[in-house]
Image: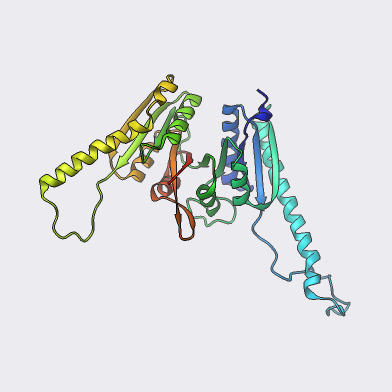
Length: 318
C-alpha cells in the first residue's frame, strides 16, 4: 500500500519544548503505523495593536502626520508586513520540526504545513482526516504552573478523531496499555486499546472504576441491610461494564494478552495510578454540551493533567 494514500499522523508544533516532545512521539507513532507524518504549525496568537504602524510611515520630516493621510490607512501596510513576518515564522517552525523528524526517522514521509488559522482550528480540521493527532501538554505563552495548556484542552474538547496528549514521566517501556471505560458501550475506546496493544506487542488492561454516590443533605441514612443490597446490586452491574465493552474483541484480537478489572475507587485516581505502569492510557472521551460549548468530563481532566504516560482520547457520544 502506498503510504501517501494512508491517513497521516498529525502533530501540532510551535517550537516549544513541549511541542518538540510531542513531535518526537508523533514520529514514533507514524513509524509504528507505517504512515506519513504531517507537521502542522498554526498562526501565532500575538498580533499588532489596532492602528500600530512603523515609525517612518505616514509622517513628515518634522514627525507630524502627513497631510490627508488616514491613520487606519497608514496602519494597514504595517499590519500586513507583520502578518507576513508571522507567516514566515510559522513556516520556519514547521520546516525545522519536519527536518528534525526526518533526521530521527530516515525514510519517513514528512509533510510540513504552516496555516493561516489558529492552532486549535487547524488541528481540529486536520484531525478529521488523520489516523492520530498528537499535541504536547503546553506550548509557548502558557503559565509555567499549568499542567495542561488551553490549546490542548480546546483541541481535546472538539476534535473528531483520536487525540494523543504527550505527557508523563515514564521513560522506559512498560509494554502495557490501559483502557479506561465508563460504560459498557465504550467499545470504540476498547477496540482502539486492543489495536494499540497489538501494534506495540503489549499487555492490555481494560479498567473500570466506580464508587457509590453520596447524597449530601440526607439526614437519616437507609437501614444497613438496604445499603448492603444496593451495594451488591450496583457491584454486579459495575462488574459487567468492562466485560460488555470488550465483548467480541478478544476473539478479534487473539494475540493480545487482555484482562478486565473493576475496582471500587475514584475513576480519576484509579486511572492515574494505573498509568504509572503503562506506556499509554486510552480513554473514551465523553464530551457534554455545556452553556459555553463542549466540555470534557472531570475524569478525563484528571487523567490529562496527572497521568504518568501519554493519553489517547477516543471521542464518543455523551
